[in-house]
Amino acid sequence: MDFEDAVPRARPDDLITQLVRQDLDRLSVAELDERIALLAAEIERTRAKREASVNHKASAEALFKK
Image 1 (cartoon, helix red, strand yellow):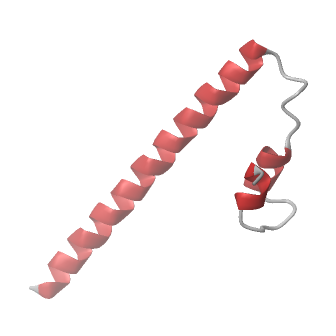
Image 2 (cartoon, one colour; image 1 turned 90 degrees about the horizontal axis):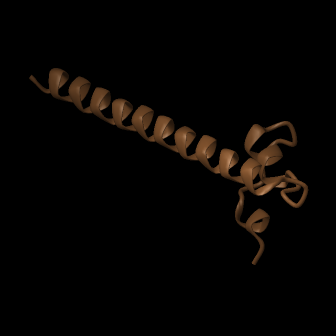
């Protein structure tokens, strides 16, 4: 199973779709390392946003339960 097959079908202009379809064969090892670092940073940013959203929702629910 190819990684692209695992990605949900999205709009053709979706950035994730474009990212997944990018040809990696033409990138050097240094460029691949940079890409990995950037993607890891984006994953951490997304996780932090998700955590903040979960905490915000829990706080709001606790406030309105009183």
